[in-house]
Amino acid sequence: MTSNLASYAIHPDQTKGRRHKEPAAQARTEFQRDRDRIVHSTGFRRLEYKTQVFVNHEGDLFRTRLTHSLEVAQIGRSIARVLALNEDLTEAIALAHDLGHTPFGHAGQDALHECMHDHGGFEHNLQSLRVVDQLEEHYAEFDGLNLCYETREGILKHCSKENAQQLGELGARFLNGRRPSLEAQLANLADEIAYNNHDVDDGLRSGLITLEQLAEVELFERHAVIVRKAYPEINERRLVHEIVRRMINALVMDLLQTTQQRIADQKPHSIEDVRNCGELIAFSDSMRAESKALKKFLYDNLYRHYRVMRMSEKAKRIIRDLFDAFMQEPRLLPTQHQKKAHENLSRTVADYIAGMTDRYAMREHRRLFAVEEE
Image (cartoon, rainbow, N blue to C red; front, side, top):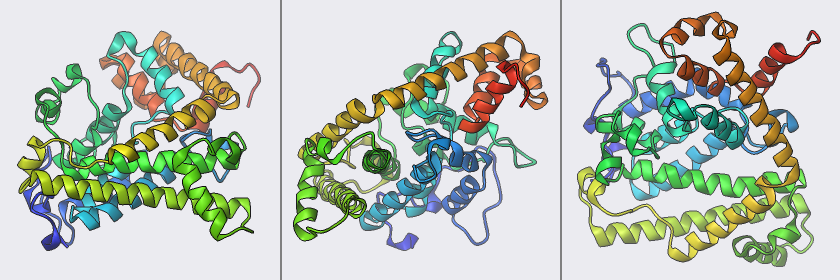
């Protein structure tokens, strides 16, 4: 497969390597090895019980961070194959991109960032990198998963200049205005394709948004008209699936066509060319506008729905209560975290809370604050 890669793709034998030197794997490329380490990590398993939009206990069919990450990986691999990019690297980045997410989705992240305001803040992309670099505890010779530079680069898709200055070569591109690999750029947009379209599906399944409301969204309604015309007797569940799959395909095909044209125009021949080029993996202007309109609709009608907002406020209270309790009395932390708390209390508390699943955070909150016994 590596012989079919484009000259500007990341080739496994050209990796900048790992932070800690290791013997090469006998039967896998370096990026296959990264992917496998991510899949077997503790952080990846915890994604099964972390919120995408709906808190985990609200229903078995709603997406979680785990199912979302798998969907991102599928979309990313499919596009990478057409573009002759490194599928294994794309998949590894996609599977790891949400490892640093807190419980309760963006509400949890916002609350933890507020709590950490005077301690350096909290940002889930940086936390994902922290998970794979430091917090996973599997190997005898090093902390973290010791992933390749290119995988770590893709995980860190956003970074403030202040944090970038502390990350050496990995943070330099944020300071110098350089681009990451095409595989990293692709994983980022595959994430957007997945969450926008699948949040439509979950929103309709939950009853918080309706087909009538979505008729206002051009990207959705255009495909709804096609499906209804082709299948006039179709039931709603199948209708929604047929519309969503067509929306995803439209976004993927637009991204492919736009990217292929940009590559033809800018003519990158190597990864260094990619890093110095303008944005290469992209939607057309018209599709970008339609995607933004869908995202705005979801923000206004789903993410800000009063039922979602009520759960979000509960989630924020849980995060704040846990943070304040552990900061005021570090001996409330589990034993394995107390030693680290002596070195950096606030960051240890943030690491502990960020690593919680939704249900574990709720259980820990009850243990600390409920008067009645469980």
